[in-house]
Length: 349
Length: 262
Image (cartoon, rainbow over all chains, first blue to last red):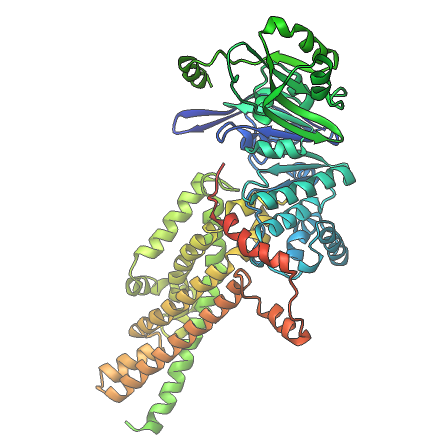
């Protein structure tokens, strides 16, 4: 649905060059929620602005719904009619909502319809319908300043949906909201994704957002995508930084002669209560040192760090059992408790 | 000089002053509003980025702003004669007043439009809006309270300028004060003129403030007088659900405190 190829953006100011994007290849499938995460300054904002060409990429192509936007754009800095038409079919939601304080909620949602040249009656019918969809039917005549942050973002989402887009871009849409409101906005985005088949590309610096609603994710660093894939693919990738961030596990062995392993739950296999099965089958005591688990669609997804008694050689059979269940088992990167190693490890992080 | 002698003089002078201020304000809006918007739009990184046009417009505005009005007035005498056929009287003064007010108002419009959050422009662009959409539906409506405040300042400056125009035969209250009050030592008339000017300026300022407050009311939390009136009429005690109200009490602060980041 959204494909970028070799997307590069270089800012030039006073002879200095800053590379914000450095050859980004991104592929967002139709109907999925795709999250791009990274530190501030990693180029996420530039990336999402390049998708609807609010920023002109220095090189590379952007294709949305089969239409090559970079080819449409032409040479000049101003957007031509074709590009504007294409943009009207891509919804965008902003961190700071960007609602017009001079207009009522309803009138804000009508703005994109005015731009599209929709007649007055049709506009207000559509606006009220969208307000109902985002659960703010009673706020049509209010002004944005009278709403809470979460309500404002709902208006922002309703406005982004006014042009019946197939694609929604979300630029840190929950970063200005408190955790509870964030959850309700994410729930709304998830519902819209399911009900309308909306493809959502979102950028965020909150792992929680990716964990909550994303089907796929990419990690950006210094203008490059360093990791990408579906959430379970990422989990299955040994040493994946994104998976470690999404499902962080920690914990040191409680004593010498213990085996510490990280068990990754993903895919079909993760429906069985494997840990208790393991314990009963081999009559061993297992302690859980740390775990980051979620249940998504009845399946357990996440990672767990467990400790088995005895050295690794003694635990080959139980570990084999876990692997047989379709779980991914890695010996955890922990050493025998020694202060020097600890500081070394933290330095490496 | 008796009151009955003063009355027709005062009435005519008042009408002349209002005539000059009204028409020069109209021209100041016609000229200054587009000029101010163009100054913003042609700036670096803006929608119609054009360094040459921006520099030229900026230079013209600065030229108009740097001349003291009394000098502009004298300097423009030949031009006024060319435009309205005479260099004396309120009509001739309007030419100089308008030319003095256009750059003044343009700068105020520029400042007001620059204040509009760039995110709003971005939002309009993301909906497929072009330059006209951005100007007419975003920049102007959002800047309107500041523009009206600027207009109030401009009108008051014009009232002052129009009194100066009296010095070179422009007519109006300024002329009256100089010709009768100063040159003929009619102190009473002078004082009445001053009171009249104070009254006019005060009324303009009050009106301007009222309009600005009405416009800005839409943006503030408690406001929306229309909604309030309707609320009272229909006597609905609480439209907000309790939990929504609780949320709105907490959330906006957190939303507005976050500075504009990447």
